[in-house]
Image (cartoon, rainbow, N blue to C red; front, side, top):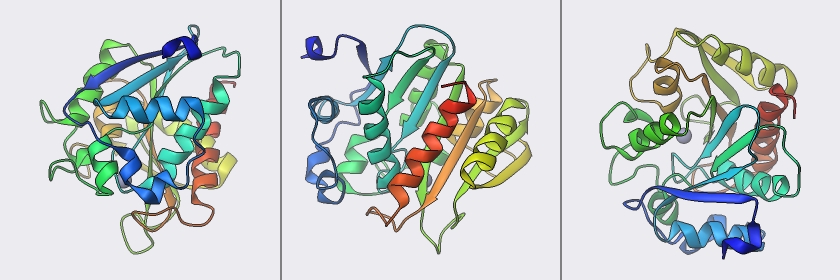
Length: 242
Ligand SMILES: [Zn+2]
């Protein structure tokens, strides 16, 4: 099947997380079913796929679906992936559009009752496996995309970052905040507030990372939220000169 996308490389983070994303009508009905999107969804039937585009410059990761019921960034990541296969890239972009297919299938926040954004520091958690792949692939920068409901945490459009030990986290967040208007939230030290966020664990391991949030009800795609998430993703790429 990959012959159709000869500039895309695909591998798996793990097979434990497999799921039929098409069973979640709240995202499936919102997708444009291009051949590439179908290929991503079929890959999810076997586990968590990671895709690579380009072969030069910095290695960037766009990650979404760490919380399976946060649908706008997952749709945005698929849309961006579809847009970028048409483009000659001056950097290397990795995509994990659906980090936990099982969670997205079930439209639920957790994976086997584990909040993956509080478990990235725990050996063998799905998010820890993602971090290990990030290290193995020598990915330079990570952006993790989420959505937040009005009455939840943080409850507003934001970019999370920290200044230590990876100060470029703050610089990336600052750029996106300026460009897109998302509020910046920055901590002095990564992981000081709580443990196990993908962003914090990356920053603590010396891989500058941010978390972007758009506002949307959980388990659905709120008006304007997909577009905003896509804007945040493009701004992350623009920081690197796309
Ligand atoms: Zn989230």
